[in-house]
Amino acid sequence: MILLKKLGAVLSICLFVLMLIGQSTRNDHGSGSAYAIGRLFGLVIVLAGLFYSTRWLLILSGRKHKVGRQAFAILWCVESILGILLGGFFVRGGHVQFGSIVVVLWLVSFYLTYRWLSKLRKEEFTGLPS
Image (cartoon, rainbow, N blue to C red; front, side):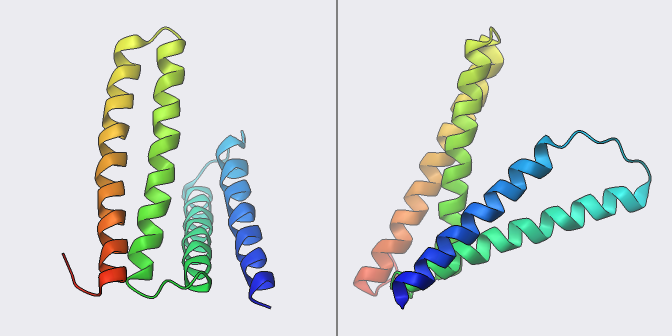
């Protein structure tokens, strides 16, 4: 039964990621404040769904210590990896200076977030805050 729940969590994470990609690549030109508020509200709901799906998967995997923070750190690590790839595309596209800055900023972000995630996991296994 736990395997089905984990599969459901993974499928919901994939669904929310696809919804984010679909929303970011949509090329419609609505206008007005109602349209902007609607898009923002939709984005907030999708991001919240992604966060809680990741949190649910961590809980099903046996994590108990600061699961919300671990979920946020995991999502930010993935975001940092995507930012590094984006910077690499800028460098490859001829914008070397801008791409290098983007890569360095996202590398620093990834390093700091990964250290934070490691610290959270260490606290979980030892039971003591470090």
